[in-house]
Length: 460
Image 1 (cartoon, rainbow, N blue to C red):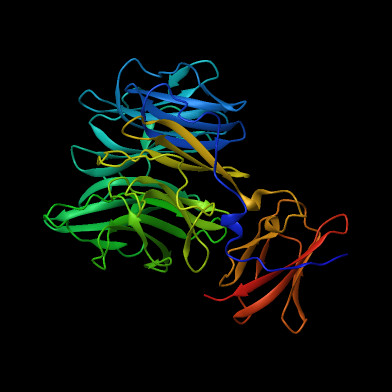
Image 2 (cartoon, rainbow, N blue to C red; image 1 turned 90 degrees about the vertical axis):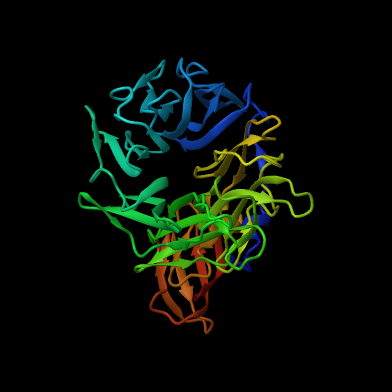
């Protein structure tokens, strides 16, 4: 067996792959908004509002094809979100007409049909967020009558509350809904009185929604005294199940512009993950976070410091700093917004085993048609001859490392720099929590007498 010592620097995730367009650029016939993207075993799906109607498209043979009719409804909708079940796509939307009641539809193979009752909530709603777990749709939203958040699911016969209704102490704005370690979580801006705004996270404990840790951050009012318009995005580490939140605020150091901030829940405290990312467009469009190649990864509207144009930027945390995914500052091919202050976040991230996907409205507001781009996931490659496919993450780590190669591992071993073997195994997870901080060598044996050696760094 030959062993190769590989020095895998932080550029491995950013320089080894590049963003490319999936199918035609600007494939929608008209401008779009409220784009969302998701993947399952059947492929990649994109949802958006076009001509005022909800639409869903699927990637087929390097093209985008509408799933069912291009317009799901005969009436206009105010906002929408899309997510995939095991097989079929689901959408949630509320009507433009008052009251703006929400409805959920799914595709049965030939037609779109309502899940339960149309207009299943009695009063107007906004800030819709959809998740589908084992073909059960969950919807989070703000009840505009009370200002509180609600989470509901379809139990097979009716829409029912998940935990208690009317969630939150104050007025809840822009809720984001996510399952973390099979537990429902909500993040939102909470208005508690004049000049008092907090970014909060709650989770379901039994049948009651409770705050997850302390307040994420106290939000300062805008310079004119108005309330800050802050969206947030939740995600979690797939190995440790640690909750992460990303959001955009005015720079706390009083540097002109806005910054992207990411925090993770440690005990009851939301601790910063690296430094804030500068040159961010605005706060109302928010950010979209997930884990890609073992790293927290966030999409946001970034400002080109040379041209002042705005494009979608995607950044990931390498354990020390935030760096652009793909090695280039921007992931979108064209400008998304140069002058206007849009009301909707017109981009989204989706993830498969092999790719990270970005959907967005290209050249908005001049054109605004839908475009999807992707970049290869280095941890999804099946080639043991490719050193990137062995890359352990996170690296550095405080103890737990995950081996991203999906090819069957015969055995791995960890050695200190004296050549002493400390442990060995066959799983995709190794634990150095009980070892002192420092450098270690990981050797992995695959089939066909192929082997690799990689440096591990344990420490904060």
